[in-house]
Length: 215
Image 1 (spheres, rainbow, N blue to C red):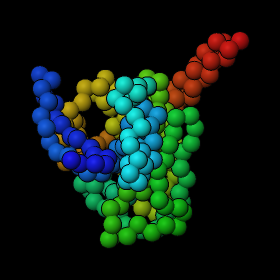
Image 2 (tube, rainbow, N blue to C red):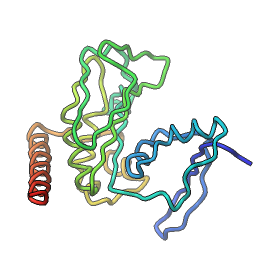
Image 3 (cartoon, helix red, strand yellow):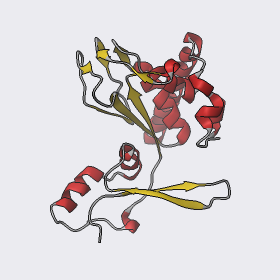
């Protein structure tokens, strides 16, 4: 007789067998990914249900479109086992552009204290394809400007340049296998420039296709 929004979690093995894990009687941190690929405002639906309204959607009304990636931007030091990094945000500029969404509760000069979860923001990026979503996410991470605390931005850039990640060869063992003890290779300036050029080229080609189609 549960009434309200809930998240049901499963694990799936190599044989595509599903195993029930848990139910959370709330939205998950990753809910913007679902919102981006379905176009459904889950928070709005949650509030409507809490007000006693009937669910306005049926499963047949839900259609998945494109691909979305979420990066949790934390005030943590990946090179020190993701230890929290406290301090004051001396600089804070978020990315923008097509398909880019940033859910954040901080501004410049906000303090990251020791008392709470050190999440700064959730960067969620949508693309027509997984590759487009990756390219847009790489560009968005390049646009971030945060100083005053250490962050996970560099780590996300490293993961998005990882060959296994790019091929979609992922599992719950990915981080422990690729970056044991949090030892990861930083993205070099040369790699960052190549990623930025690739994102710019992808954007140019996409805009050109749209222009040709409209012309």
